[in-house]
Image (cartoon, rainbow, N blue to C red; front, side, top):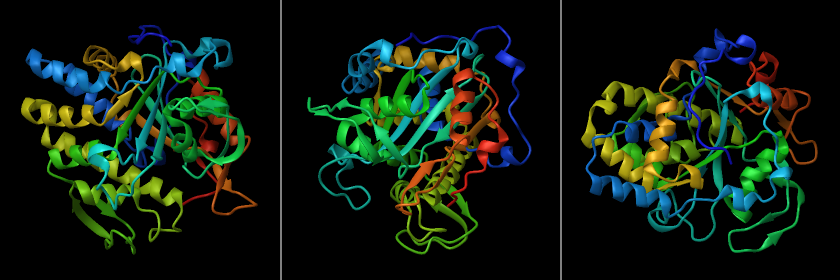
Length: 362
């Protein structure tokens, strides 16, 4: 695993500029949770005992990716064209451990990842793009060792989010690397309690719906102010919105996290040390990172390297998928669009407009 690097002054490979126009209006700031945290920590000025408490929150749950993923020669190589670009896998976990047990109709046992984003931070640290991987995507899971030491053989046509449930976050990283041939540099995982805590700490988030949600969290079209519990139900809603698929849930997650960033900017949270500490405390208790990011110093350094990213320049794209011909409740990556997307990420190039037109839509 490479060390955290700072932006280079060299020109971007190929002089890339991302597409704007209609895409910009749909841009979603889904990297806001880890970026918010690192900006909070980079703000500094916290007493040592506060620092020590937050720091221990991170170290207690760190994942050693180098050890978990094994032989370096079996991992994707770094493309020279990518320069100092970085790739971060962001997972939203529905773990029921600890404070998560009673959240959103809690059920005992197990954990899944309802949200998975491969966040590509471009060379020069002025742009970022997040690739949403639908949880219902059928993938080939590589051979993995689960956290309890059980060795799981490779398996074909398994749901993407089942990889996390059966083998944990390191195996999810390994699966993403295998399906994309993209090197994953860092891992960030946020659980239910962390998500709810952030929303409650800022006093709620206002979202606007163009269409109603007709089951579960029932909401009419229009504007709604959501607290932490309601926000959690909102981003997990699947049935009762559009076609009831996971793709509709991804759309709601995009809506919410864009609204969350707008709320953070509206309240000028970065100018309020007391609020920032409350958010950082709640988030670090519910955050798992790879071992390289598992300290406030490392996160602050990472945060400072992202200061040049304008939220308006952040981009998102969903992995191009189509409904599976055998099981219409599942989706599969569409070729050649998926390969073109992964190649753009590997080489730090512009995302082709053609890959944004996924045949399956929520």
